[in-house]
Length: 264
Image 1 (tube, rainbow, N blue to C red):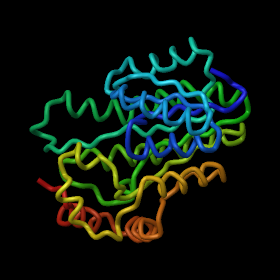
Image 2: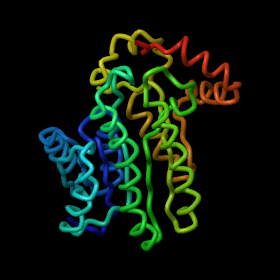
Image 3: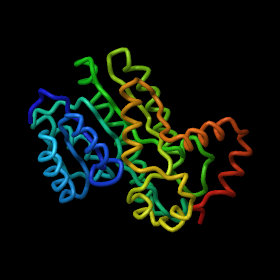
C-alpha cells in the first residue's frame, strides 16, 4: 500500500456511518484500512472505492468484542507497512436487554467493543501520529452522552466515557498536531436499530430528529479538521444537547426513567 497519501483506519466500516466515512475519505484522496466482521461487505466496498477514486484500500476482518482484535489490526498494518494517520473509531452496538438478566458475555462485549477497543486503538496509533506531527482521531460518541441515563442501557454510560476520553486525548495531543473529536450524532438512518431490535420504537420518532449518515460524517470531518474536540451534528441535536445538560440531576433522572422510548 502506498504511503504517499494519508491512510485512515475505519472500524465498523461495512455499513452506516462507518461506510459513509469510507466514501467521504476516499473522495478526499485518503487511502483506507477498513475493519468489520462482515468481510464480504468490506470487499465489495473496497472494489467500489478503489474503482471510483483511485485510492488504495485494504480490508481486515475482525470482531472488536474480541480482546485480541485491536493488536491484530495493528499487527496487520505493520506487516503491510501502513502508517495510520486517521482513526475513525466507529464500531458499536447497544444491547436490547435488561442489565440484571443479561449474560455477562453480552455486557462485557459492549464494554470491550466501545470502551476497551476504542481506548486501545487510540493508544496504539497516537505515538506514531505524534511522532509524525499530524493525525486525526474521531471517536463515535452519541447525543446520549448529554442525555439523562436510561434504564437497563450501558449505552449512555459508555458514550459519556467516549466523550470525556476524546476531550482528554485532544488536550494532550493537539500541541503535537493531532486532533481528537468526539462525534455525538443523534438518531441516524443506518442498520443500528435493526440490529439492536428497536427499529419500531426508533422509527416511530418524528422525522425531524433523524439525520442521514452522510450529513453526520461531513459535519464530523469538518469538526476534526478545525480542531473541535466535540461535534454534535445537526441543529436539532445541538439544541437538545444544550438544553438537557444544564438540568438538575434529579430532573435528568426523572426524564431518563419516564421518557426512554426503549425502556423494557
